[in-house]
Image (cartoon, rainbow, N blue to C red):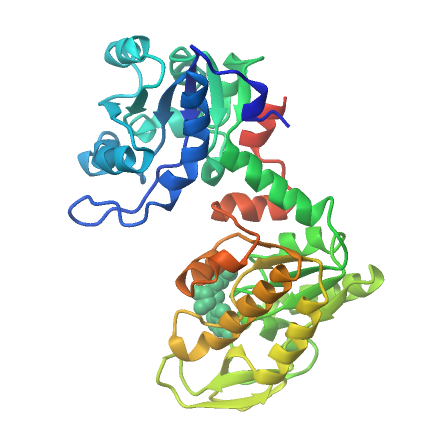
Length: 395
Ligand code: AMP
């Protein structure tokens, strides 16, 4: 893997694609600094080597130059986190930018304006990428959140640095963590897939059936499987047109010797609201007018046993409607089991969307081996796709 340690950055200018697409409140204060903190190790390494850093990122989805999406709003917070002055230039290409980059001295940091102020960024425009590339000597990609996009700054730019392109520390860690789960994994390997729909996870399921020993299926997806097998699911969420597919998945799993674990009981509610009446019912005998919104106690016991016997665990998607307190218990319990297994030496990776939000919300993050920073990017990696941003560095 082409990592930062393969390059001595002394007197070099590094153009780093970071993911500073952070949430801002109405007064343009950064409300979650995780992504800025995540880029710090890469920036520190380059500055410590005696190099300088040119940071480029997108923020939001602006239509042209919209001030509310200006990266100037994050300059102060970025300086505070990096413990150094961050210079800012109000464009990302052009003369003023070229001058600011040329004037940059070893140890200094320059942040460019939002890349998406130009349509050329998402279009993957080669000329635009070339202009960005002209600012530095080395290209570093540390933006996992956009690694699945073939944009100018995430992919196209790499071709202008045939010898001098590397993964930043964050991106390298993401790739390494996923490899620990899908390639060099210690057995038994268990994947937990939850979330609302089979349709959004089908490619992930198909890809990981070849890599895991156990597959725990939870969340709203459960009911398509249960109904397909003839169970009564009441008013639970279900994709009727995916029932055939669900049965095929069960067949394939059997053929590949993967043990599938579905919930056996659920917390059923008489409405999709936090203060609905609830009862525990078998997963395949939910009365009409009731819907399964969380895993039941017997299911959790079964899942616990599988998780604690696992050496490698991948978790994607909540076990219930965790946004409502009444239906968050299954997701929290699962996180605790994974935490316990991790403490005993298992490797655990949480990634791809809502499970990351859940893990953060319930303070489970420190108990996991690694929590991915990229929703869509992680999901595509789990689907077995080669991400353009990663391929561009490896080529
Ligand atoms: P996904 O984005 O596919 O990972 O789905 C996450 C969403 O699934 C969350 O917003 C959960 O509230 C939702 N979800 C989980 N379990 C259920 C369920 N039993 N019924 C309806 N929605 C659910």
